[in-house]
Every structure is written in structure tokens, then in C-alpha cells.
Image (cartoon, rainbow, N blue to C red; front, top):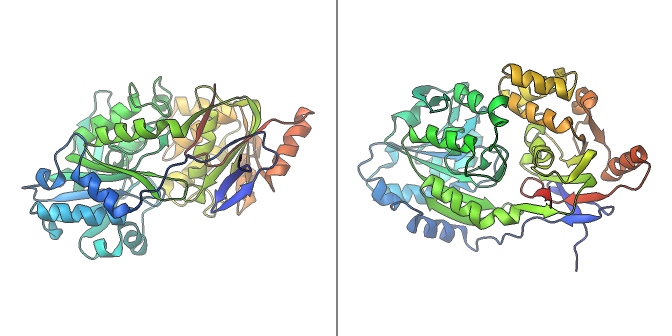
Length: 428
């Protein structure tokens, strides 16, 4: 029996009865017992020695974990990593945990305790790595000229381990791998260079592609200048639970999980559609900066499934507005100041746009070809400055479809994508 179409909107699910086609979330079974899955991954690392062997003789070890923008069961992983490091002879007072904030907002003590878990924060120091406020060290340049500025704690450590989530990523192909260090713990100079519009517009910088991707290659060059030697990556299903865990060499772990799950995420559909309703679940639905990723996944696909001038409906509750960090705030300011999508794209190719400006740039690229609607926003007035760019707040999905049909003068062909953050649709 075909399930009734629906999409995520934060924690909620919105029915989409008008949908002509439906892409449900990837059916990724939950790992039966997460602790066992992590234990097995640590015991059978990919293309690397076991951590308890690799870490022998290390005087200081840093473990990086994601901030709250990615749902990652870091506490369960960290407790077992601490156990492995202790068996290698590394005491707790030689271990620290860094939350890779990039240019997102820094965290509070309570947030750090939640992200790392109280049992871990009671044993080791947990602190932020934030590109604007944190202390960084200059580690030279990559072959393409990217400045390598990395958190001082990583630069000073003997060994770094990164914990991350693997999912489709617009620039890196997939997240995970070295990204938790190369971007999450990088200084603003590194993040600005790698995210500048001219670079992310290069051939090969593409969602779902690791090989021949200049962005991914640059991240790996950045990481190679650090002490990063091991990674734990997890795949999270639509219910926010771990579906797979792998550990070992960061690049090999990333590649293995991408091979295993890529088909579940990257889906051909019988486009084009007049309307694509894109569901965004928490925490990506928390703010416009993160939720806009779904629009770029649809609009910047190699073969977009949305008809030209079609409507892309983001279903996201946006309780934190544009977002609370410097990148998120500047993202909205750059978009709001633009006279047109084309003008913003031209500006991005001509001059720096500041923290988060690259996201405004890629959203503008989407708006050059498509319209964007938002359903479910806690404060629809947030979107008012963006109306001249083609962004509209709607009361419901039905209202968004009706507006498109009125514009077209005919019935609209509608696709519902339940989880548009982890389901990337492309025309066959």
C-alpha cells in the first residue's frame, strides 16, 4: 500500500494530499543497540589501526564533535573513545573535547554538557572551537592557496579524532570525513576562503560527489596539515537514530558510508514538477540558514526536478529565525540587501560576502531560476525583506499550490519530499 504523502515541518508532519508523487524518507533501519554498533566499529576500523594502538604514546588528544546543527549521538561515542584512549595509556586529563562551531554561534555550558554528555564533561574538558572567537594557529596554505588556520588546541595536540554525521552536502559531496576538523574547527580565514562563491561555483564542487571534488580535496589537504588521524562517522535515519557507524581513517570511513547509503539519498524522479514540497525536520528546521539547504539541494541539482519558475515550498518552523550565530545573521542581511537574485550572484563573484555569505549566494542562484515559498514559519515577517527576491510565506501547503495554479492557469504537478535534507531528487 502506497503511504499517504506527507513532509516534515520541524517535529511535525504535514499531509500533502495534492501530491502527484511522493518520496518518503530513506528507509534506514536503526542500529539495534547503539553502544554495540559503536563498539563494533571501534574494534574493526576501516583502513586504520585500532585507536588503542594508534594513540599509544600520545601526550595530548583532542576529540571534535558537531554542534547542535547536526543530530549526532556524540555522548555514546565519546564514552567509548575515552575508554579506548585510557587503554592506550592516555589519561583523562590529557584529553579534551572540542565542539566544532565553525562560524555558528558558540555554546553555553549547559549546551556543551548536553552535546558531550554529563558523564564525559565530568571527566574531560569540553570547549568550543569557533572561527571568529577562538584562538587559531597558522599552518600554511593548501596547493590551491587556501589559508590553513586551525584551532590552537588541535594544532598543539599529538592526535585528533573527529566524530561526525555523514549526509549529503552541497559543496563537500558528503559531510563527515575530515570536515569536523577542516571546517568545524577552522578559523574564519579558512572558512571564508573555502566557502567563497568563486570556489564553490567551480566544476566538480557538487552534492553527492567525493571524487574530483575540489572542495573535498581542499578539506583533506587542510586536515593533512593537522594531527587528525582517526574518525567515527554515523548515518542518522529520519527518526534521528543511528542507522550505521564506521570508524578508522577519516576519508575511507566517509567513502565507505557514502557508497553504502548514497542510493538511498540520491533519487531520480519523473520530473519536472510545478511544485516541490520539501520537508525539513529539526534541527535543520530551527533556522532559515540551515533550512535553506533543502532549497539548494533541489534547485542546484545537476538535473533539477523542478520546472523553470516553479515553486519550491520549504516546510520549516524556524523557531530561531534566521539563526543566532554571526554567519546566520549575516546570511539574512546579505539576502535582505540584494536588489535581485542576479545582483547578489554578481556581487558574490566580485567581492567577499562575509561569514555565511556563501549561503546567501547559493540561495540567490536558486532564486534566479525558481520561486521559493515557506510554510510553517513561527514568524512569517522574517521573510518580508526577501519578497522582492521571490520568497513568499504561505499559511499552508494548499495555499502555496493554489497560488502556483493561479499563476499557471492550470493544475500544478506536485512532488512531496518528506525529508528534503536527506533525500536529493533529480530528474531522470
